[in-house]
Length: 144
Image (cartoon, rainbow, N blue to C red; front, side):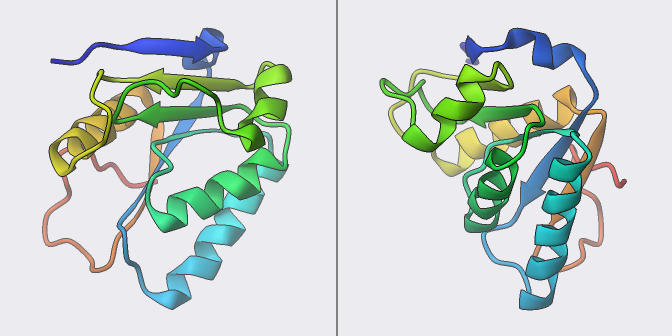
């Protein structure tokens, strides 16, 4: 069961958002293209929503935190007791929303899938990176 908890600027849910979802492993040639995409989103002030849990997603979050655009982080676990230090500036600038979808201490595959579905449902567009091209889109995948 989803138990949603919010921390930060809940008004960010009302603006245009692009979801970023990435597999845990992707080809090296896609990494630089993804960094370019993240830089473009940052420089253009575009809101990005993601779980920011895979290595690539964490890297993208670091690019975004250097900007001034809104960021929505969706956790597939309970809310942090202490916010990570690198998020504090964005939080202070009122451009960060952290959403927790449950009260479990750790994320598992099922919880991550539920989180990704929630992220996709909240988004107006989805930017998706995966290891191989899918024969069929995932249930929450829409191309941009």
